[in-house]
Amino acid sequence: DDDFEAADYSRKGPYITMRFKFDQHTAKGLLRRISPSTVDMTREDPMPQTLSQAQAIAAAPVAMVAPTPVPVPRTFTCWDGSQVSDLILCPVEPKPKPKPEPVVVAETFLCEDGLTTVSDLALCPVSLPAPRPNLNVCTDSPVALFDVPADAAFTPITHLGTDPQFGDSRGLSPRQFYMKLNTAYQADPAHATYLDYLFRSLGYADGWAAARPEMFSDDVLPVGTRGIMGFGDDHHYAFKVLQANDQDREAFRIQSANGQVAHFMKTCGNYFYGCETQAAAN
Image (cartoon, rainbow, N blue to C red; front, side):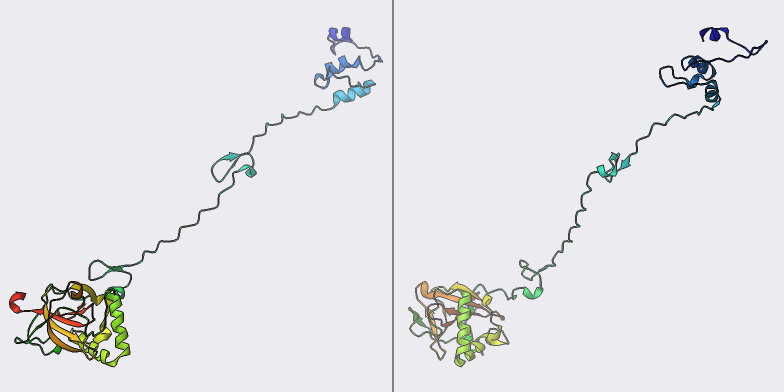
């Protein structure tokens, strides 16, 4: 009780053994004296009913409970360097970009003309000698198609088409006229013999087989041009002076391999070898 507490009892001096009887409320002060840590004054838990129970409680060792450590939150590093508390919270990693295909640069070649670029030199256009700016020189020649003797008698011609050789070819492009001659070459042995002879005389050893569309070009002969003109299906020729109008003087020029200049007149498809005197050429 309070008086007992206030006496601050000690073990010195004589003692009288006595037996006490008390309830759970009077035991609180004893328990608080003996083991203050075991008594919670705010609780209404039932106290021991006997002294022996109270002594047993007082004699029981008091467990020292260590404080619970504060958990340290775990963090994880995602693929992009961000920090999260759970890997499932990481952002979705994008798929790697596919590597670009290597760029293949096609090899190209510059043709002899200095203008054309091709992937294979075999595709370059045929390199032909530069055309002569003037007509041929009228002179003797072992080639009948080029032979213009000094005493040749030229007769004027004012209108073409009366005795055609390969027919009216006005309106055809140089390529189309080449195809027309090629058709005639395939269809008529006489035409084939003539065209082979002509192209061999122009410096092509294979004759007409060496002919290409790019060897043909448009041209207009000057009025008064003298030369050898073919006529007829039998491929005859005569010495003529062109006195015709502008349309009849239109022609297809053939590029040779030996410097000779030959034409086919558009109006009639006739061969023409134009020439001028040596003095005029100079």
